[in-house]
Length: 365
Image (cartoon, rainbow, N blue to C red; front, side, top):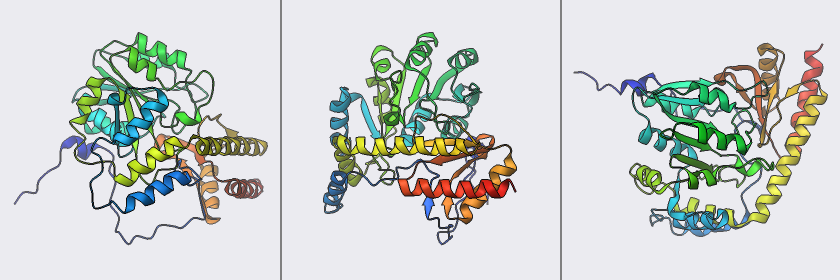
């Protein structure tokens, strides 16, 4: 008897082996690895979540209406052109399944969100990685130079993950204007809330002025709802309605919808969290640079920390883990000398810096 064989494109994409459910993960006192918020959600979001518990016998609103309503009002957007999903990562998969086919070429930043590569591979398309500049900023001209008659989609994370850098909006506008009209431009703005620079914009206006633009966002980061998985997108009616074919059932849970709407409405709490995160990033950057280490300027809730070589990076990672601190090595991105460090609470940041100072003393003999 022959076993069924998976689609070749799925087989060829990076694998993720399922461990045993009783596999014991190392326990860390401080986790600075996953770009999560170090702060709990808004008390109003927690209250809404608890209210939802008594309704778990009922399906949630199929269209995430309450979340879309508050997002539409907050950003002055047409809510019929907003789509919610179980994290913006799910929306990225919808985009790939809707608009990428075998033989297409898809452009993405070399140091862009890793999921782009997975989705491109699973559609049987060719991933075309473009280089950043020496400061890990995406170069628009490198994207334009990579375009061929096979290019179908451009994935563009702005701000970038794992880089923490951003591209000024004027350059994003230029990219859309100089790209061939038929190419879909995906503006992945998962960290937009942290990018408060005057020359940054996530791109909603581009959606309204062009046919082929989609902006993806999330409530996982600043709003502290990573554990509920709720992302959203804004695009043309045609693109949103196309992706609705793939949405399936009730993919955003009732607790996620109710907590998400409440979190978005509590802007005062979000502003408090933003200020603490920005202060934390400034502190981490300054302290690490004072140790003689290289840190890339970041507008996000994380930084990239660079070492002299991969051995020093691995030794530092191991030392931090021995001291109960987890950070994110970036070897999977081809960055063998770099750690990504998410901002923590003030106490967590101080503990991390103390551990780093101790490591640097040890490493220098």
